[in-house]
Length: 274
Ligand SMILES: Nc1nc2c(ncn2[C@@H]2O[C@H](COP(=O)(O)OP(=O)(O)O)[C@@H](O)[C@H]2O)c(=O)[nH]1
Ligand SMILES: [Mg+2]
Ligand SMILES: [Zn+2]
Figure 1 (tube, rainbow, N blue to C red):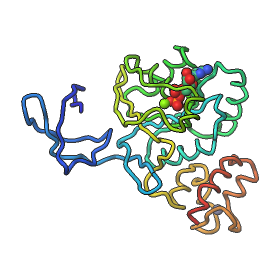
Figure 2 (figure 1 turned 120 degrees about the vertical axis):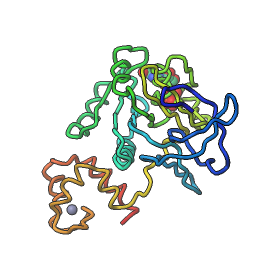
Figure 3 (figure 1 turned 45 degrees about the horizontal axis):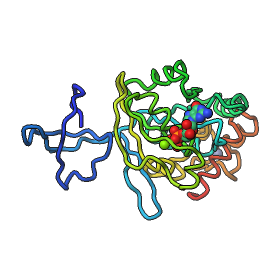
Figure 4 (figure 1 turned 45 degrees about the vertical axis):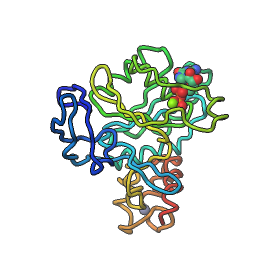
C-alpha cells in the first residue's frame, strides 16, 4: 500500500476489509513499528467486475484508463474490443486501443480495418511493437499518472508491453502455442505496479471475462456512445434500436453515419437483455 507521497507501507487488514481490491483507497493508522492497519475504505469511483461461471467478483477499483490491446496476430476480435469499450464507458474510464506486433507482415491491413471501424470515435489508437522505443514512449506518455489496466485476448502481448513500460518487472510472457496447449492465462494474481514516471498499472487475471457492473439494455446503449447520441431522436423513448419504427439509430446505420460493425456488436451484446 502507498501513501500520498508514494511511499510503500506494509498494511494489515482485518476480516472486515477482506473485500478490498487492487486500486482501492483506504485510511490507515499505525499499528506496529513497521506496519499499519486499515481502518476505513474510501468510496470507489468505479469497480471492475469479473464474471466466473458461478459468481461475480470485483477484480479492481478506481480505474482511469483501460488499454484494449489487439495485435496483428492473433486475429483481432473487434466485437471483444467493443465489449471492453462498453465496460470502459460505464466505468467512466478512458479507452485506449493499442495495436501491437506491428512488426508482423500484414500489420497494415489489420490497422486499416481497426481504424475504419473506430475512426469517428474518440478512442486513441496507438500502434506498438516489441523493442520499438518510440512507440512505447508514446504509449507511456498517454498513461502517465493514470491507474491503468491492460485487457485483450491471450497472446496479443499485454505482458510484453507491461514489461517494456515497467523495466524492472519481468512478468512472465508466453508463446501462443504454450497458451493454447495449457489453455489458460499466464498471469494468475492481481497486482498493482508503479509506472516509473507516475501512475500505476493493475495486472489482473482472467480480464477477458471482466465487465462493468450492472449490464442491462439501458447501460449497453450508454456504452455505445454514437448509438446513445442518436437514440434521443428515436420515436420511442425506450427504443432498443432493433425492430422499432422511426428509429434514428437504424437510419444512421443505413446512412453509414453509424458504423455497421459497431451496430452488429451492439445487437449481439443487447440480445440477452431484451
Ligand atoms: N512479433 C511480435 N511478437 C510479440 C510482440 N509483443 C509480444 N510478442 C510475443 O507474443 C507472445 C505473447 O506475448 P504475451 O506478452 O505473453 O501476451 P499476453 O498473453 O497478452 O500477455 C510472446 O511470445 C511474445 O514474445 C511484438 O510486438 N511483435
Ligand atoms: Mg500475459
Ligand atoms: Zn431507435
